[in-house]
Length: 112
Image (cartoon, rainbow, N blue to C red; front, side):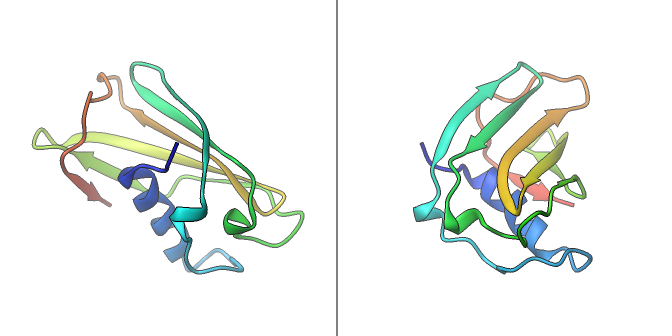
């Protein structure tokens, strides 16, 4: 499986966060593989295969980053995201709504 447009956008926001000391400033998503993507009804959890492409931070750094949200589709559904970094590798993205159902498809993304 490949990363979705939404997952790519969230990772892009992570890499634009000036408060973080990342070792890479971009990701070649053609080299990124999704191990699993699970939908919960009100969100999703995507796990990535560890790879040099997702080694975004120094060894030993682990963090949970959530400084991004998005309005999805014409309805402007409010959503939030949590990015997991373990030992310098981006491992997981969690997306969630604030109680609404996760949309079956995403046609528009407005990050904030």
